[in-house]
Amino acid sequence: MSRMTDKVVCITGAGRGLGAALARAFDAEGARLSLAARTAPEIDDLAGEMRDAISVQTDVRSPREIAALVEATVGEFGRLDVMINNAGLAIYGPVGSYTADEIDLIIDTNVKGVIYGSQAAFEVMKSQRAGFIVNIGSVAGKMHLPNESVYAASKWAVSGYTGTLWLEARKHGVRVCNVCPGGIATPFWSAQEFLPFPDKFDPQRDFMKPEEVAQSVVDLVATTKGYCVSEVVMQPVLF
Image (tube, rainbow, N blue to C red; front, side):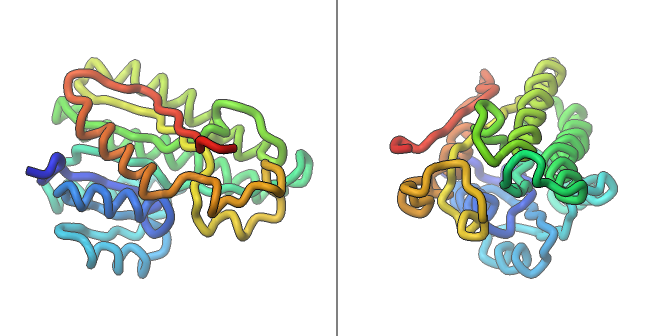
C-alpha cells in the first residue's frame, strides 16, 4: 500500500520547480492534492495529471487568498493532513542594489506567505489534533552568501518563525519542519544576473534535482509518526 494513501496535502508554489516535483511525488504515494500557484494554467494542467487533485489560484501574499485555499481544500476533501508552504522567490544582487518594490516582493512572498499559510493550516490541524506543516526554507537561512542579502534575510525569518511554530504546535498534535535545501537544479538560475557561487559551478550539473528533494520531503512526512524532525538541511555533495 502507498504510504500516503488518501492523505490530503496542500502545496503552494506548485506550478513549477520543486512545487511540481512535490505534487508528483505525493501523488505517487497516493495522496489527495490541493495545488496552489499564482498562475492558474500551470496548476490546472498539473492537477489534471494527478489521481485526485484540485487547483486553486492563490497569491500567498494575500491572507484572504490563503484562507480561501485552505477552506477550498477542506471543503473538497474534508480535512488537511499536510501543508507545504513552498511558494517563494529570489532576486539576487549586491547589497544596496535592491529597490523598495523588490524588497517588499521578497519579504511578502517568502516570509508573509509562509506565515499566512502556516496560520491557516494550523487552525484546521488544531481541531483535528493532527497534521504536518512543512515550510520550505533554504540553506541561505543558515549561512551567509554574497548577493543574497534580502533573500537570506527572508529565509532566516522563515527559520525563526518555523522553530517557534513547532514549539506551540506540538501540544496540539501538529508536527512542523523547516526544510532547508541547498541549490536545486531548476530553470530559475538561468534568469539570474548575480549568483552566490563561483562561475565554475553549473547549477544544472552540480545542484540537487527537484525530484530528489521532493522525495526526501515525502519520506519525512510518511515515516515520522511518533516523533518530529523539526529541521532538515540538504546540500549538494559537490559544491
